[in-house]
Length: 167
Image 1 (cartoon, helix red, strand yellow):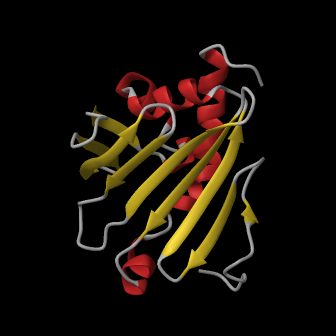
Image 2: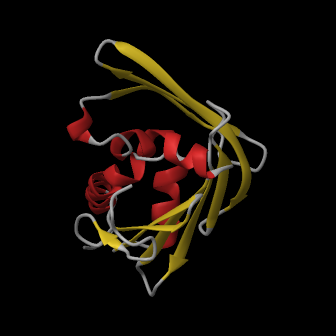
């Protein structure tokens, strides 16, 4: 973490903000010009999720995307990067259509619990991603992907336009 104050939001790109809210938590937020139903579908349907999740600048590819987006369901993502593969997996502990997703990150003991909320703002959606790590040490060891969320969310914006949302 850099020298910014913990309570100071950090705009990354466009409307995406990243804020470290405690020694174990980080919050990423962005307003999308699409209804919550459409944004939620982009997070829960594998055929849509695959189109925007991996930041293109990372040079990674998503080899496999399994999303059983229901309470008690599981997910599994397999990536290829620089000739090797890595896997992320966990379970959905809460799925409330069009408003809330909560899942675990079980690939290590340092995995966060991620909560994503989709708040309707009159045809737009305020998306908030909240990662809570089990300890300060786990946060320091595992966080970092949130810095790529500006690019990732830009890719989601592009997908939402192709799905018929307005900008």
